[in-house]
Image (cartoon, rainbow, N blue to C red; front, side):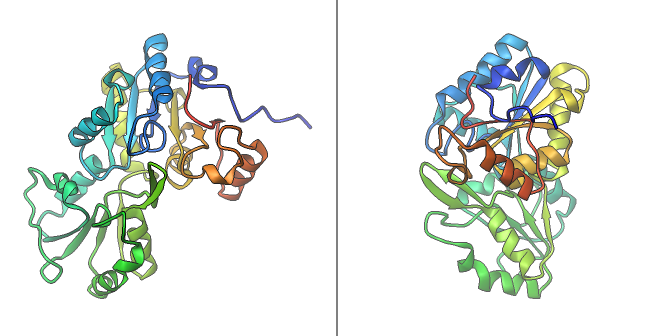
Length: 290
C-alpha cells in the first residue's frame, strides 16, 4: 500500500505551476477583520507576477464588491494582490431583484444597507414584510443567535422566505469569534423556515467567480486549472469540493485550535477532520505564504 503524498506543503510556490487561476477567500486568509496578513498578500502578488495568472477574491461578505474593495484598502491589502472581487452580496442582489415586489425585512447592521443600493425594493418592518434578507446580527459583538429566536419564530410562523447574504457561521475579528448571518439562517432552518443562500459553499457564487475569471483571461478556465484557497471547512472547503475545484486549506483560520500548534499543525488531525466532514483538500498550509 503506497504512502499518501504529504498534505502540508511549504507554501503556495509548491502548487503555483499547476494552476492558471486562483479563487481566494478573504476573511481569515488575507485579513482578520482588523489588519491584512502581509505574507498572504505577498504570496498572491508573487503568484500573479510569476505566472501571469489572475486571482479573484471570493468572499461571503454580504455587501456588493465596491464597499469591500474600500475595506480591503483600509485593512492594508494591496490592490496588486488580486484582479477582482466577487462577493456573496453581489450574487444575493440578483436574488433580491428576482423577488423585488415583496417588501423586505432587513436583519443586519446599518453598514450592510449598501446591499440594497440602487435596487427598486421596499424595506419594511416585521409586520409589513413578506420576505427576510439577513446580512448579520445588528450588534455582532454583543448579541448571539439565541437573541433572535423569538423574532425568527414569528417569521417562520408566517412562512416568510429567508435570504441569507452571508453563509458564514462565525469569523474571527482580531482574536474574537463573531457570529454571522449563516448562524441565523441555520436557526431559521432548524425552526422549520425556508432559507435560500447564494454564497459559499453554494453554486451561484462559484458560477459568478468562474465567469469573472473568463472575462479576465478572455476564455473559460477549466476547473482543474483553478486553485481555491480558504480556511472555512463548511464554506470554502466544502464549496471547492462541491464545485470540483482543487483547494488549499489554510488550517490556522477559524479551525486553527483543532489541529495543534497554529504554526505547526498536526497533519493526522487535519486528515481526520477532513474525513469526518466528508471533505478533501489538495494541500494545506497553516497560513498563506509563498
